[in-house]
Amino acid sequence: MQPTTLPPSMLSALQRVMRPLVRLMLRKGVTYSVFADLLKEVFVDVAHREFRLDGTAPTDSRISLLTGVHRKDVRRLRSEGDTTMAKLPENITFGAQLVNMWANSKPFCSAPGHALPLPRLASAGGERSFDALVAKISTDIRGRVVLDEWLRLGIVRLDEHDCVHLEAQAFVPQKGFEEKTAYFGHNLHDHACAAVHNLSGEGPPFFERSVHYDALSPASVEQLRDVVARDGMQTLLAFSRLASELEGVDVPTVEQRQRITVGLYFYTEATDPELSKTPEP
Image 1: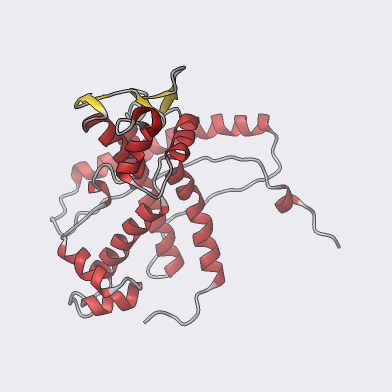
Image 2: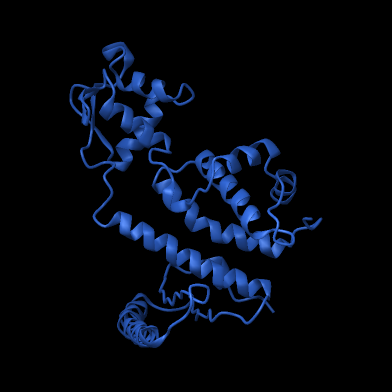
């Protein structure tokens, strides 16, 4: 059963943790509705895998009780089988769906993969206009709203004839993006797992420490950045060499095999003036 009252400190911490993730999602076009659907899947999956009684998989009703997800959705998600973060379908965002239709569906393309320049207004281009393209995906969002945002992001450009052009590289991931995303998921997941384990107080804690200062000059921050990059990498390489040596002589059974993640990170931003004020006596 869920506790009747949730600790305000935990809710505040979760809110803080989510801020950079929401920032990333907004930058990449992942809307609240997409994330809410994704989160629903995660809630059901974690409850199914990790909240069993006597080794027995929980019923739909129990998962619904634990997660707050409607039993109808629980049944649907469980019937869809195993889903993982790495296997999310492409084109899950509104923007990606829009680009997909533009590049691959008549009358918005000359051939699959070749998006045509589109007159901005339906009054000028009719069914082959940017307004008409947006309306194909959603009647709740006006074409002008999408256009303004995409112009800001550099996804499209507007020519002197008031036609909208899809930039060829607009939705092509930057070089190495897929690899960066894989490491992002792996590293953040394992760091969060260590922190959650330590907060739960179950078993020996994992090493998870950091240092914090809030009155450094930009020059000092750059000096620290260089030292962390140099010495931190040497430390990680030393850990890697030791792990490699140990793995070379270890002969664990399949059941005994374990994986590890050891990480270091550096972050800086402007100090919040409100947080740096000296308390009045």
